[in-house]
Length: 399
Ligand code: HEC
Ligand code: HEC
Image (tube, rainbow, N blue to C red; front, side, top):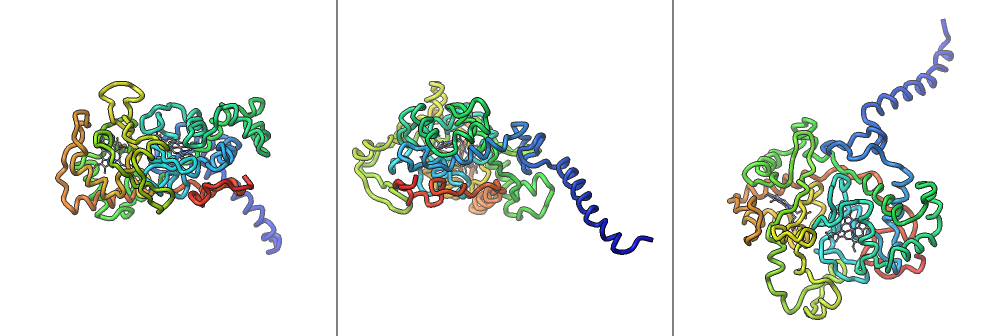
């Protein structure tokens, strides 16, 4: 018979053996996100890619948070797509860019952007890897005067050249690899496993309250929301990836601009500006004709892409122009049937919702807040931050 000490000597080996087997089995069931054959978070469709390259993801993450990628080293992608705001901006109706200039549109969430076929509210971009060049070059966003300028700028910043070599080998740092690295990082920003997902797709009957369940019934029934914000049997992205006119864009275009505007200079600081002065420094919002700008098809006038509603409780204000402040405002808007004009979607009509129905719908929408990706925190380094967004507009001498 073996002594106790001999037996206990086996235990560490047993632990190692069992944990190796355990990890192997666990990876068969649910491989780590991004690995070959990886599974998406609960409630999301199969991943639109076979695997992610960790070196590219890490490089893309550094670029995404780096303020030095802008002309005067003040703006990073993460300052408009703020991780703790579900990668959207909640502080102003439309995004605030280079030197406080207002952008014409609200900054959308980048969570689950990997599943989208088109990008921007008008769908003008079809490649996630090409998209970053739009903000990098826009004079009111990151304001690089040219592609070559931006590449030379990145080349001068410590470490990037070697990180590009590590991630892309011979190709190194160029226009395409900058976009590919950022896109690889964006593809890792998956968010599912909301309370709604646990109820609908994992059979947890207690994950939603009775009120939220009533809200879902309205969403897919009387209120007709799921005609555009699709909900599947196995998964849901809450978007049909199509373009519809709700009347919001039309309204902004036909009503004459007021003589003065309230302008948000930075979070909470509102000032009055003459219309003529405002148009001198920012793009006029009512020139926004939506999808029509891409297709020139009159049927697309003031049509915008159906946004996903995942994490919608975190991504206020709402619509392409951020004109609706709360989810209750959005429900009131749909209850009235949107805003009437010739081109309005035939799917929108007055809904006759009771006060109870409206609050049920709002509560249901709040149940769509999902798990957030692990890498929410910006990488460390003084130029790699988004948290003190508005106060960091001025140039940090270290960047
Ligand atoms: C100054 C604010 C600002 C900065 C900086 C910025 N964005 Fe955006 N982003 C926006 C706005 C506003 C939109 C919507 C514009 C539109 O629809 O025309 C947008 C749209 C997007 C979209 C499309 C999302 C969708 O649902 O269609 C992606 C992807 C994106 N940005 C990624 C980036 C990346 C990557 C960077 C950095 C290279 C970046 N953004 C920098 C404000 C910003
Ligand atoms: C005809 C298709 C359609 C129907 C039906 C519809 N939506 Fe939408 N929804 C859209 C489009 C398109 C937008 C974007 C409009 C814009 O940006 O101007 C949108 C935007 C939203 C937003 C704002 C999301 C954001 O991040 O800004 C919410 C919330 C929303 N819808 C909820 C609902 C609810 C609730 C219903 C049912 C009462 C509903 N929708 C019915 C097409 C639709």
